[in-house]
Length: 221
Image 1 (cartoon, rainbow, N blue to C red):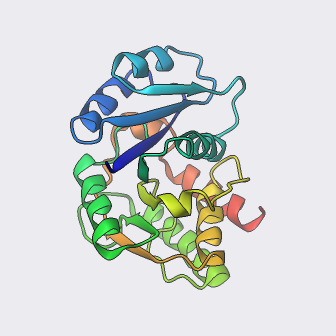
Image 2 (image 1 turned 30 degrees about the vertical axis):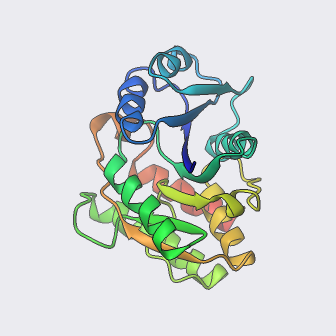
């Protein structure tokens, strides 16, 4: 039977992770959280909500957490595709389900979420500008006509998961992933997603400064 697995990178998300996982598991029961050496009880909260938890002994960054998750799901023979999903509650489960269905229907290697294909996501003009600038740079370097290269909601096929090898441990991993999609000539599509920026998610790094940091990491990686 087909099994969609969800990989959730996690660092100090104890206050929200249980609710995020419980909501996910209503439709996508197979969830692995990669705990990036949290200093709170994120791991215990994730386990209590029904997720498998893999823990890093030291803090390595989100890119490393994703790669650890990819390596874990490769060991599961029934895995057919992988969803990458943020731990802070800003992604919508229905978007993930729609993207899984699109990957299957169109027989794609990857479906990438985009905040810029509809008007549901509310963000500041400056953040929008910086993210578009980062995406423009990625377009130039990869030739891929993306609208949003730094959206953490993705669905990746089993075959593609075995080809990905992220080496950028921190935020520049998103651009590296796009580079590898281009390198492997993968079939891809973008899908509209609704990202909800709460005060909590903003405090976890979803700020304009973080977007600028991503741009700097991309250019000087």
